[in-house]
Length: 564
Image 1 (cartoon, rainbow, N blue to C red):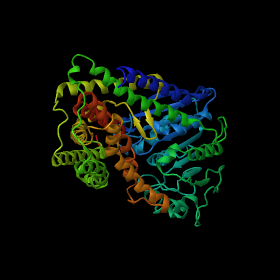
Image 2 (cartoon, rainbow, N blue to C red):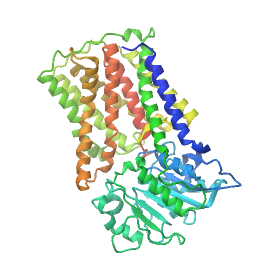
Image 3 (cartoon, rainbow, N blue to C red):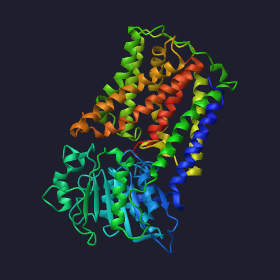
Image 4 (cartoon, rainbow, N blue to C red):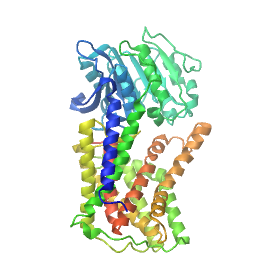
């Protein structure tokens, strides 16, 4: 066992190193980043990150680009695009859509926030108003098209990444609208029917909707420029061999956007599309995220040494003597039931628990229902398998206290990192964000079901999985595999058919399939924290309360708010 304080200091060192790396990359070449707030339509508070190149001034205004993330994401997810645009001399405004991040709710309001973002970008005196581009991913593409519709003379070019024009969420595309548009639509995009009316993304070239946008009756030829840039009628299609969510992590997809704006906007500092450094920022915030987890465990270790919490300390006593049939049944049910029940439950509760004033996040409602039902199932399995206790230690108040302090210290470190470096802790669309007041109120409500889940699941796992003869490493491995491996299989089962024949195993469920990816690290983390704290207290309660707070924070801070 490591010395108290070592994990905390090691985690803190990783956080600092990761934040410094991320900051150096996103400010490369003298770029300044500002966390801005402005008022949108009907008084809606809007949030954005503003990337300002060093030579963008009121005397020498620079071209500007509005960058808009997709559904269930936030402004930080656009960092790959924003960093590369800013390195090329473009002022970039990466907004939080309405109902996302720190922008006011609900989602879908005011053209998803796109028109308000474009209006604000055009108000900046260091932006060349005759050279403005708009880039949007997924639902952010609809925000972009709505912005173009609201200000038809307010922009010059557009890039849609994994998105489309047209009903029901955006104005219809024509050979003249939007101006100079590049459609980057991946060959394995999960939303081809929603976006372009074709069952398989690789068949997007035959989409009638896309043909109308390009002004042709023949299949659209990828890479061929249709129309005329000078007239604002240019169109081009790019089809990188990736999925919808990979647009954010693809040098090819980002490179197409870079190339298009360098063709259609004037000004800036041209660089080859292949000259990209954004991924080092992703690596930096990933290092910080890993450091956060390590620091969280170290914080618990340090707090356990305080007099009030020392009563929790105890050597772990595994409840299982050997791997018999009961153990294997518990193991495989723990691994298999959560992913097998995922789609049926979330689809059922789409209508049963819609967004409301008390439960304003639709997807969080569905996940909370899934979590509680899986927690109850785990409890029943534990009772049926006659799992023994983990030492009979039920010190509830100290367990709650140490959990609250552990998460509070972690939250404070994230707040400091954001203030000093303008970063959060993330990789791809898996990120840990601070909460504004509205989301904190939601956090208190959603904490109830996720606490039920964490307590019941960790009770079952830590009573049924650790074996007396196992080493600490084997115990960690078994609990992590039991909780997370099922979703690894689920994701592979969905995407293998996609890469083989162009459709998910569950066609039409692209959103839920993409969102399921984050369950792999999240459930692994629950197993890790639960096992770590159990090994120091012989109780599942401290870890369960820490996981309940962390999971609720992670989900509530990152999800869209569909009701107020």
